[in-house]
Length: 419
Image 1 (cartoon, helix red, strand yellow):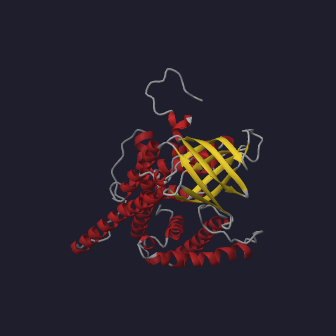
Image 2 (cartoon, rainbow, N blue to C red):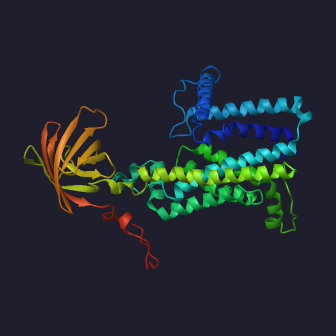
Image 3 (cartoon, rainbow, N blue to C red):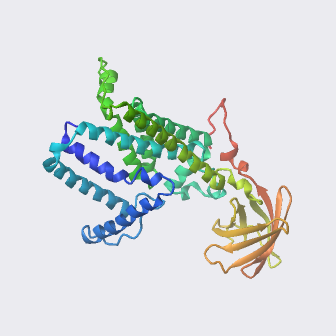
């Protein structure tokens, strides 16, 4: 890399722009640093989009659940241009005083710890597991043809806790190996494979983390680069190769080495355990099994439905009769009409008085009070909904009533069970 100096300088500048203000922004209580940088970019990038790129629409949407917004692409373009200009100035005006070997050393340290931290974050989120939840009643009732590619991928990953945990462990192993200089290349090679798979999912299932996953994969590639030539000689050409050292110790005095060792130990422990703590906190509130806290949890299939004391037959063309009531998460419920159109409500359950209050998610003034009575397998709902008296009997279903969820694992299969 150092042989091609201007390319090296561009890469250093570009990736520094990508990762700053790391590591300060991950320290608890230092959120203001992220806010400071975001405020700067939120001013610069919309201005570039409007005045230089002359985009048809102003940039008003910033990074959110999607990391592939117009803002994100223009931000990367901005970083590339700044890195090109910076590399040119660096090459022609500041090269005489530089030590590329030392710059390369600290640059790689920064990449290793940044990539390692992100692998810990994503790895723990999968290994716990948290990132992909078990398919909801909504997903189980939705025709597969109506799913988005991302929805299909999320359902695929969320269905199997084992596969999700396996994926997370692979990310954790790669991230841990990055944190020691002697195992960094192995960690980089592992993450090239792991992140290559993640990147493929993001690209081919239209998951809006394409930019970030590509950036992480490129970081793994850069970290692995010094050993790729040796692996090629060993594995492809089948010729001997020699051990090399591509780093130079930054300090030589004993006291400096001790300080560095203590500092590194603290950083490594923080990078390993802090994402774990964050994900454990999220798990308590949003985790895979949090639905068990919901008192009326279940999918209720309507068996008898009366509106204003009139029985409504279960015709698929009917737009009044309900088909399902789904109660899965705290303070949330949904009901489906016979045509499978879904309506969502906020809910408050009073288990003592057996009452449930439904509030329209779009209009908080629309509040409906229902009473319920239930057995282990049935539930009856009675109340006023949109000026109509509703009385419905239901049969309680569980996720195990769906083939996808009850098939289970089978060592022996005389024939493929591909339904």
